[in-house]
Length: 182
Image (cartoon, rainbow, N blue to C red; front, side):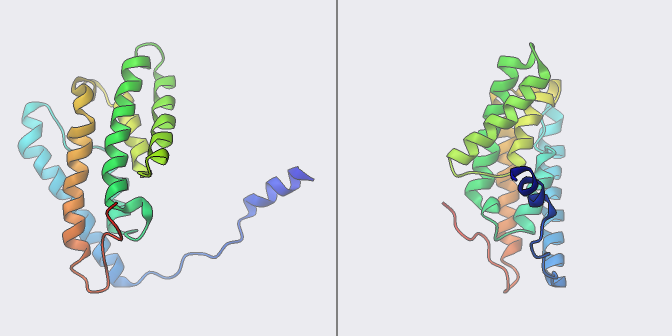
């Protein structure tokens, strides 16, 4: 019966993740503290005085991918940059078209269309969904950016984090980042 098969899928049954080596924990932590720290510093020093930001919440999830899950296809430069920039455009467009009419619908459309666009352009980066949603729910400061938002903070902040990932992830002789660029 299909219902039983359906619920059986929810039992899991795959193998649990292997043990993580302490050096991997160290390099992941070092990369993320430097990456987020540099973006936050640049934001505070050069952007915040002009009522701009370079730091958005979705970068926390990007940090997990580009500093800890560095071999994942979702963590590669094309996905990081393309995912944030494209999702930023989708989020701004969703807000402009639907935000004044129905905010919950605008948020749902932003995330859904961002996923579809990232998928179709081979730039799938899960934090991009949050980047799209932030464009809808981010408040006046984000709304005022309009179509600058995909570039600053989404694109430029992701680019700064990428530079840090290239430097830090390759300091260890056991780590290599990226796996590929395009």
